[in-house]
Image (cartoon, rainbow, N blue to C red; front, side, top):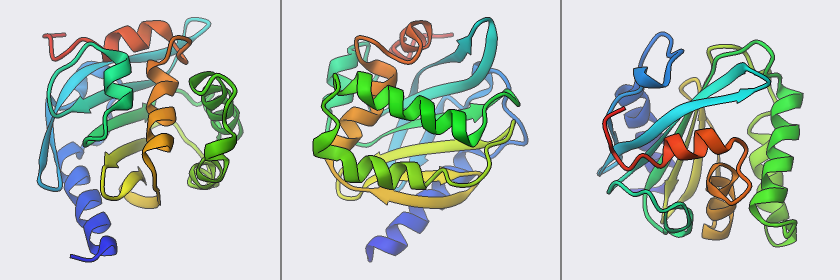
Length: 191
């Protein structure tokens, strides 16, 4: 199967598994998704808040439940993060600014080795961000991170080092939101 066909198949499978009109609560996320030939289970989910305002909900999907942030971020195995924008205060500019800050923290300021990949990733978010948008970040070891927004493939960023930095935005020692990090690391426990 050609890489382009595989990307399309993975994106279609992801969208079929996660289709919903609106998810405004982390508890609305499906407990299991199929990405290509892999079945991923919701490891944990929660909301990203800032100054008492919920910005988005997120769910982390893994092949096996885990509570070990370092192991998850380092793993070269299929996984996914689903983000649903729940606030009109999240704009394209604020998202890019937040990603830049997240990559700085996730790499402890060592972004140079993956600077090209970060630029590719940011380019996936050149269009407007709106309340209700769904962003799927799906890692496949043979392909890289597939970025999907509202059912449309936005790009693929190759490389395990990039994947590690990306997932560390939510899982590192200084994550975007420590409460959300803990929620993502529930290890398949009932929410």
